[in-house]
Image (cartoon, rainbow, N blue to C red):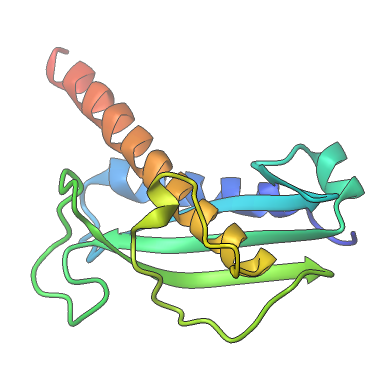
Amino acid sequence: MSGMFFSNRAAALNAGSLALLDTASVAMKGVAVAVSLAYIGEELVLDPTNEEESKAGSRFVFAWAFGSGMATEAKGDMELDNEDAEAEIVWTETEGDFTRKEVSVQMPYGSAETGEWAATDTQFEKAMQRGQAAAREVLQFFRETLKDHLASRLQR
C-alpha cells in the first residue's frame, strides 16, 4: 500500500470534528466521523495499525455525517445527543483488491449493528457496514467525551 495511512486520515478527520464541536460557536447540521478498515487475508481489521495497513491486500476509510435529517433535507441545528441520528456517507477512499458491486451510498443502519452480513455481501459492503457500526461507536465516544469536558468547564 502506498501513501498516507488511512487510519491517520480517519484520525485527522475525527480530531477536526471534535475541535469544531469543542468551540461550540460553529453551527453544524451534522458531525463527521471517520473509520479505517483493512483486509489482511480474509480478516477485516477495524482501525488497523500502520504495520497492519502495510500488509493489507485492501484498505478503506469511510466517513459519515450524523445528525437529524442527514439523509434528507436538514432542518435546524444538529443535535449531538440524538441516539437515532441519521447517517449519510460523505467520504470513502479505497485501495487494493477487493470484491465489489454497485452499492447505494446511503446504507440503512441494520445488520451492521450486530456485525452480521448476508453471504452475498461483497468485501466492500462488509467493510462499509462494519465501518458504519464502528462510526456510531465513535460518535458515542464523542458524546461522552464532550459531556465530561463541558461539565469540567462548568465546574471552574
